[in-house]
Length: 252
Image 1 (tube, rainbow, N blue to C red):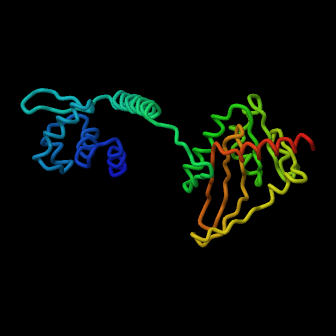
Image 2: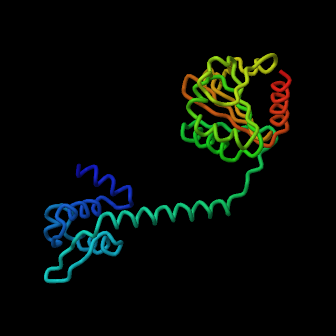
Image 3: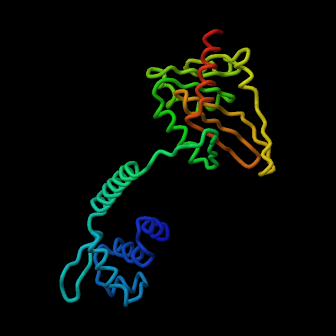
């Protein structure tokens, strides 16, 4: 347990000596520097420096005397303050980065590949947040709709939403505007296989493709080495494809 506590404290920015001293004092509640040194086994030459620094940072208090005693401040109060300070710092940094950042201008035929699970999830939720007018989801695998249902469903009231599947009966339990692909649209939902010669791998576009506001395109694929995503923005072909799919669905 002590090792886990020390590891947790180190994620808050404490070094190993500081984490050992603080966790020792939490166990003792109140003690002299000598007692803390003997139990924590932190070098005697560092103990006063560390205790005074922890007091300066608001983790512990000092009771003057001969010798001085050190005591733990209310843990809930200390950690609520840390949490609030951390959240405030995150918000301030995020806003500063947003003011500082310049929207990248992608070359006309540029696509970006995402290879980490976190990056893929982040981009999916980003698309759901920023869609303004319309979204087309070409869904190869209904499990995608089930997984993100709680994020997709609210969009139905705000935008023109088209969810296209190969077979409607596979999605009977999914309460979304489902369209069954027919004619030329059905070709888009056939499993596509791409050979990645650089990675000596076969990549299958067999999960979903998403068009957003005739400007953003996003597709998820699977390969022998994992799950990938490709996205692109501000290309005329994206708007053309989304408009064509919608027209075909409405005609049918």
